[in-house]
Image 1 (cartoon, rainbow, N blue to C red):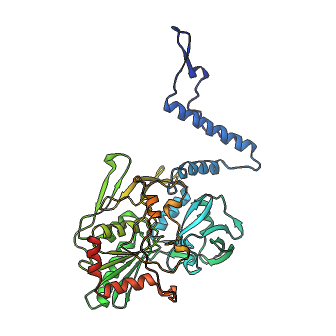
Image 2 (image 1 turned 180 degrees about the vertical axis):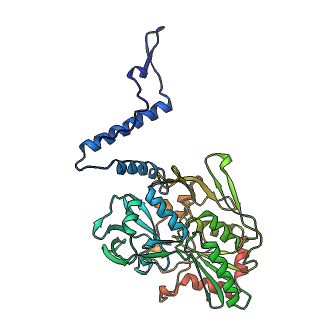
Length: 440
């Protein structure tokens, strides 16, 4: 059966012009916005009918509509999209902290799936998947041109099943990497004692993050005999997640006051989010680690600690995702949902980091890089249709050269130079001096 969108408004040709009886000259009548919209909907219906009738292979109406919706939303920015009903269910499972798959945050770049960051302790991380990798095929079948949701669906599956992903990495030949799908238990926070200093690794912001952080801080305090001389908060490679969790995590280090504000297209859409009083880690020196894959909620936490002068931020400039997405269920989720960019977020000092990222107080590279490049990670400003920073700051960030500290030539990258420097700063007595210089 032929499916055609209902014709909601046919504009008769006679409506294009009205003739003046006084001067007998034709005067163009501008169509209303509503009339133009109806004509464009008619065009969409016409194209769908022609595709259904003439395309080389049969096509499904639902697939055509899904692709049309995604094309419309992804044309706005790289983070807006239509979520089909089955994918909406998967997304709710994902943010709750457990699902079956490979464990990586991905985006779409010109029809190719690109890795933002693998998640700690997952098949993707253990297999050596890296930020910036392109994924071009799954089990020998090309996923080029797939929608992001369809590509992700191909990679998810029954835990225990093997999957081979074709990876293209800059400067290297394509290669196949075989992994085994697993239940991705997103344990968002783990802790250690590093040379007498507390270390918190926050890998993502899901519904379990704040509670897990509170437990970890209590364990660190217990293991150090009741007194914590310093804490390192590692947000490197953390792609972000839930806004409310970033507020709660920030509350552990801030005694009230602003964490972040969001501003939509209307003045009345502005909201300010404050930390709770009674910080868990009050008075403890803090160093936050970031890199080019620290995004979204990670940047909220790092920006709040930096602007509130609560601690030092060390590493490399972050990803630069300064926009907020709202998930809007359609018919209570029966028709899926919209993931729609509805606001920008701003640090307590009023900075928008959209496309620019958080610049560290102390720039430290993880390795020696060729050609004086500070970082080679994928960034928000590299994504197609990325929203521009309203202050036009993207170019300034790329042109300004940071004074970056690099590891010695013989330093083993596995020994983590950035973490080593963070520990040294907390232990060598320079923390207070460096923080005062930043406040300066």
